[in-house]
Image (cartoon, rainbow, N blue to C red):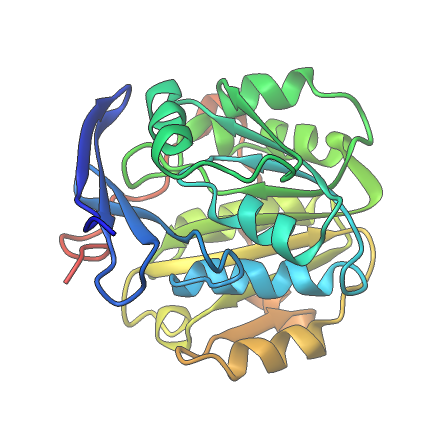
Length: 281
């Protein structure tokens, strides 16, 4: 068998590189302009390498009974790590992936193809525009993991965007988002305020060091109209090799504090991460 070699290609929004993992035979790391974007093991799609992706996976595991097929909308594609995970753990699911970078989608389809029966449709489109055109009550889960470079684009950080997400979700649907911030958490609090204005139940998953303001890092937001099994989610996150805390209820409302919702006209991207925050090696 020939040795896997790195692949580098100029895509629509930068330079993408696929690098084989020396420790796992058919596993690949995708970077764009040097920033890690995705990790995929083609032989074991349920394997999640990145800590924040595992937290999204734990949340996905708790939104419905084990193995139940779901209709999932992914905003942000990368190397399709979570669509592969859902296809592997919830056979029969129907999934749409919206990725603004057509060149990146083509690179991934060529070198890391999905199984024929994966039930995943790929769309090269802007996430907000696609969401605004999507039908009401059409998704069980909406996962937002959209970064332009290393920042969430401003048009995906407003209350109007959150309202579109709420409209597209079914009444018992669940919204999941990967966000990133550091103390004093102006951006993260504003995002929580947006979704608190629309959803009765909010949960935040992050490493204790991030929540204590010690460093910049990822935070996973979970929003729904129905209570989720936060106790099971907390157990999964606490048992991870990189433990995370699950905040909800009064403690999370206290964290949001007096933060206001964000109009489209005032929306800004997530903060620029400090040098090396998401680097490799």
